[in-house]
Length: 543
Image (cartoon, rainbow, N blue to C red):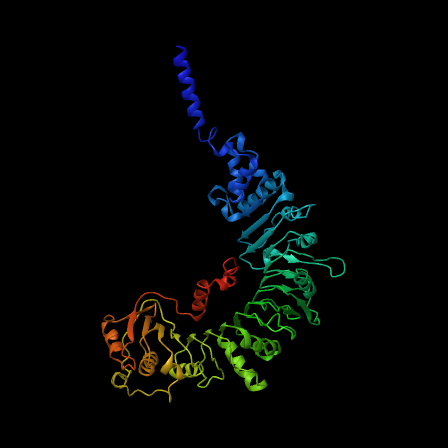
């Protein structure tokens, strides 16, 4: 009997040791290890482990990362949008009240997205970021957004000024908040901050932004987008010296009716990657040349006023042309550069450039640019004469991507254009630009045509390249995504194969697979394959 009872007891003990809640190996780990593991989960899920057993009630209260995102709240359990957002804010307040090691937090993330502008979120999370003695916060990421781009932010209090003196802070990302600092009483010193991201942030004046940027001596990455300030008083230019800055990204700062943020200039001798889009903000003021610049994205936007006030571009464009190895230039930027060349005789030689992505230009048959080292060119054009001009400026070009796409309705069917002089193309008698660019005779080996729809202009481009490309090895012609050829692709493919070629080794392929037709997407895809371009992908997807 005793043996049987002992066997039953051992069996029960074995079952208990295998119980997923009371006897699992994970629960036997020390609290600090459990807290470390839970730090990798969204806070909602980390807090949820408290229901597993009494053993799990405490570990989440010592996690080093807090990650709040109202999109993780289950909408089906709540009556409406307002109730869901209010419940989320109450949840945040409860978690912060029960957390036992706020001063040992390493990462704090708070994302709140609302669908209406009159919602006022809890302000309690700001108070938790008051730096306590020995604070270890390394990353702060606060994002407040709504369908009404500015309405949800009007009632928000700015972050506590003491936030801007956190010695351990390495990453600061703010979106939809306000930066209101007194230039006489407040101070900014973030000795460890390496990354600063400001999206839809409003400031009282340019001095506040200048204080923030200048108070970060080791800053390496800055991303400013859709930011504006309230004081419309014109100020003199403020210069921020950032010796460690490597990545600078400025987008759409002309978004509001307030004055632009142009009174701030940057000295950045270590800059490697520059992205200016719809902006001439933060020009580089003389001083240190951009000798470390590797890549530049320059799009001045479509606002005509930018063409009238081009002083900052006069300072910046020579720095880019002299140093950058990879560049994106929008259509408007190319026009501005040509205008500045005519008006101020700016240099148009790009001595170090190897990769260029250029927007569409329609009225240039002789571009005033020279690219002695260019090997890869992506250009949007529908004119054989404009393409001829680009090729004339790049004597060592090895790879060409010509984007010729037009706007079509989805799945539009077209016929091979009856107006195309097929006989002239096949006989090599079509009218082409005079002279043959040096690269077509000696270096160009690979060509891609994107957005092809078989119209006369596009056929002329292909015929011209095949006829002149003496050492061409490969030409891939990608059909436009929204175009279907009536009767199939066989006749079109046969026509392409019958076009005269200067290179007998050239392989021509007509491809139906979807591929991005935009020059911008081509620049991004190249960046993703190049580790030096990781900066371009940061923040953009978070917007």
